[in-house]
Amino acid sequence: MGCIYKCMYKKIKIESKVTNLRIVENAIDEATKEIGISQDNYGKILVSTFEAVNNAILHGNNSNPEKIVVIVMTFKRNELKIIVTDEGSGFNPADVPDPTIPENIEALNGRGVFLMSRLADKIQYSKKGNAVTMIFNNIIS
Image (cartoon, rainbow, N blue to C red; front, top):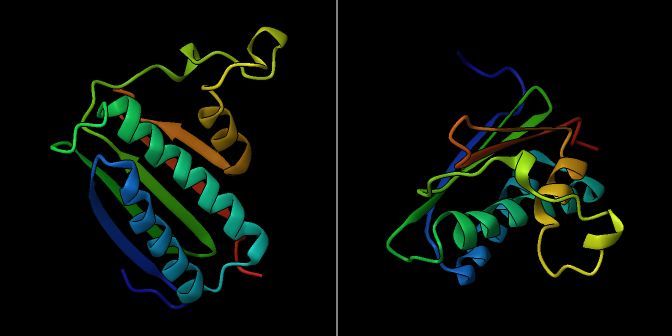
C-alpha cells in the first residue's frame, strides 16, 4: 500500500529512563520537519507524547532501565498516529482520578491522562492497559 501524499513511519525503542525523553523530542522534531506540522499542533503532539512516554517509564515500567518503551509514529492522509507501549502490567484509565475536581486540584500527579485526552483528537488504550494510541487529525498547516 503506497502513499500518494506525504507518509511517514518511525519506530523508537528507549530504555525506561526519563532522560530518554530527549530522544522522543528529537523524533517529534524530525517528524514535524518531515511532514510540515503546524506550530500549534506541534505543541499538542509534543506534550501528549511526553505525558504518554513519561507515564510508560514511571508507572508502566517503574523506571526499570531494563524495560523498554516503544514509540511508533505513523502519518498518512493528514493523520498522525502515535502509539506508546510499555512492558508493565497495564492500568484501567477509568480508575485515574479526575484532576479537575476540587479534591484533586492540588495533587502533584494525575494530569497526564487528562492532558492527553484533551490534546489528542482521539485516544485509545489497549485492553491490557499498557499501550496508548493517540490520533491527531489535520495537523499540516
